[in-house]
Amino acid sequence: MADLRKINSLTKYPSIPTHHALDPKNGGLFEEPAAYTGTVIGTEKVDGTNGRIILLPDGEWLIGSREDLLTASGDIVHNPALGIVDALRPVAEKAATIGVGGFGEMLVFYLEVYGSKQLPAWKHYGAGEPAHRLFDVASIPDDMFAWDIDRIASWRQHGGQDFASERVLNELAERIGVDVTPRLFEIDGADLPADIEGMRRFMDGYRSTLVATSGEPGLNEGIVLRAPDRSVISKARFQDYDRTLKRRSQAAKRPEKVSR
Image 1 (cartoon, rainbow, N blue to C red):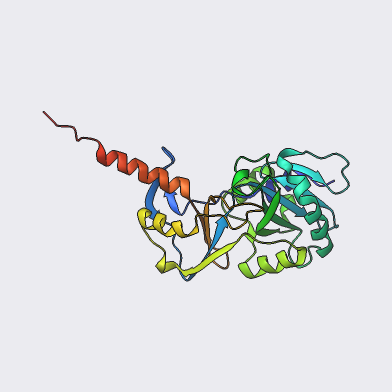
Image 2 (cartoon, rainbow, N blue to C red; image 1 turned 90 degrees about the vertical axis):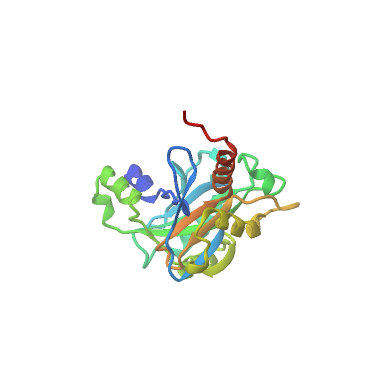
C-alpha cells in the first residue's frame, strides 16, 4: 500500500509568490518585482479552486483538492468537495491511458476548476456550469517515498518540485484533451513595468475573463507570469494592486501632524 500521506504531501501545489513582494503585515505590495530575463508568458489567473490529478506508475489515479485527496480509481464513494471530482474524473480516466513513462514515478496535473455555483466567483464565468483549465504539470522522482513526511514538506515548500516547461505542458494538455489557461501575451522581461502603478495600468488590458462558459464575460482574478521553462513564476492579482494603491491614496490625503 502506498503511503497516502506522502503522496498527498509530494503532490500539493506550492503557493505562487506575488509579482511585487507582499507585505505580510497588511497585504500591501512593496516596490520589489520578480526578476525576469528574456521571454515572459502571461496567462489568465482563473478564479476557481485548485484540483490535481495524480497518475501512478501502475495506471491507477487519484484526484485531490489543494489540500486533500478526494478519490482514487475504483472508489465507489468520493468526497464531493467543491465539485472537483465530478469535474476531473473524465480527465483522470483519459490521462491514465498515457502512462507516466519518461516523467517519473508520479505525474501530477494541476487544473483550475471554476464556474460551479459551489465557488464564490462563479457569476464571472456564466450560469454556473463547471469547467476546468490545466495550468501546471509536475513529475515526482521515484526515490522520494523513502523520505520522511517532514523532509517532503520542506522540499515542496522550498521549490523542489519539477514542473513542465511551456512546451511540454502544452503537449500533455493536447494528449489528455484539455485546454490550458488562456495565454494572454509574451513579452520581454525588461518591458514589464517595474513599479506598482505601472503594472496596474498594464494589467487593465486583461481585465475580462477569456474562459466564460456562457453569457457576458466577467472579471478575471489577475495574471500569472512565467518563464517558458517555468524557472520563475509569479502572480499579479488585481485586488492586491488596488488595495495597495488605495492605501497610498488615503495616506496622501491625511493631514500631516504638526510637531510642537
